[in-house]
Image (tube, rainbow, N blue to C red; front, side, top):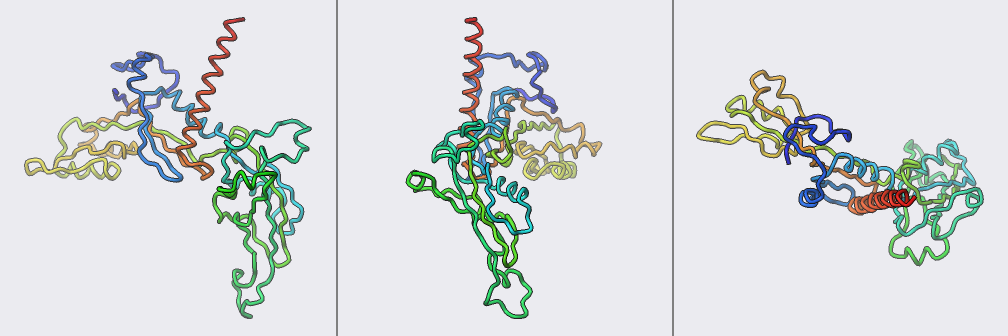
Length: 335
């Protein structure tokens, strides 16, 4: 890889646009250089490097993660009783944004149209949830108490109060994985004695392109790998100042022949700081660049699916798009 001056990477860049950097397409070169390195992976976040790819493909992959990997979300809210101060429309909107932990790969898309809109849905395309709760006074509360948590029962409605109502054979199919909100501490509404909620919800399969509630990620972003080069030895007090100009861990001070010398340890931790440009004796000692084909991806899941599964599903969506495009080309040639 050849680093280039820090700047925007455009999809309109043409081969030979950057001196000394050959970005003409070559299949053998792509197969040799392309790789994906997983740097960090846990239940909710994933960081990996995608190396040897064009910016257009990397951005397409990011957009697919945001808007085209399907999930299950609340689509219809049937409010039978709502005596809280929260309006029906606001309540329905809040419920729709609660992430539901259900594997969308086990469900089908619900057919569209006026006829299907009137149908209740089936076990293969719909999840039914219920929220039924009523607030009452706590008979055991002390007489002079002013704390609502002690005075009332069920006065805080959380996502944990949403219960799954199986349809058809769903109880047997999902016996090992109970369908429920991802987080059980999402506040939905506050009640006072006598107020109650009685709501039925239908979850369907959809994509973030239709509504943000279907997006499987809290964020999906990438950045180019920084490349920091010291053009001259930076020693003594200058080295200490240079270290403070970058994020922790980027620059380290080493003892060379009894002198404190600055050295680049991990440019990956850099946040593209330009602080060193404020110092006249440092601004010409450092060169900043970025690798144009080394993308550092960060994927944070909403919890519906693990981040590694989301990445795999996004790759499948991209493959289907490519196959569809090739099919269109073949059909055009036949015509």
